[in-house]
Image (cartoon, rainbow, N blue to C red):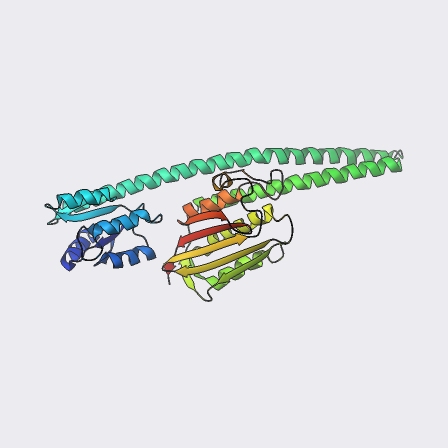
Length: 370
């Protein structure tokens, strides 16, 4: 079953379409003109729009063009309603991006068949996207496993060397053949081995953390009532003891329904990414602005770091691409994980750009009003 928006300036047509569609179990919203329809769509995009071609003011064709030019609504199929004599209008409507049409007077079986076709196509697209996402996730996990092997192998070798050295020192002490200078040198070697092991195990831990983030893309979203002030405090407190100045600005007491934990996870990932590529000089600062307007949660996350230093936005979003290769705090997955969470888990959009002093993410997420 689908969420369907019906748009028609004739009340009788709206009533009839609602009756036919609701009998099949669809959730149906109605609008008497394109302006009302756009407001409904902005608050919560439907899965399908059925609109009359000719309406006073903004026509159904113009409504379709608006939907198809907006990134967050371009995927919504549009079925037009017309009369048999509207051949030229139908051609123009299909050229505008319409997916199908039904004619008046209404034939319930025809309406349901055409709606069912569009829903099946939507399901097929969702399935294809999910398969593609699953493939990407599998490639990421395989890549993570490959990337883990090197630091893990290094850590095992370092620990093994340390263990062997310790056993030799114990043996020397037991036989009273320990030379103080040799003893001190061997202990220094152990210290070096332990430091090397710690460095590489820290890198492994970073990869494991990224795998957990990747797994969240496949988890069900859990929307709850979220106060932006609480979200801001949560994000800020998570980084209060880290070498980064995080400032979160919100409109006090704005509330909406969305997965606050997942949004916080995205922001934590972006802050961690900023901290990893860091600053060459001075303190790292991350400024986050969060607001809600017309059913959209808007987030700006900007740092004063190095920005897209020598790589493109496309490259930045590829797994394991990083300007900090070998740095234990930067594994090259943060940006791609954040992007996947935004698009595939939260059904949102994002853009990334260099600004005057660093890197800025602009994020838009659909939310439900309280």
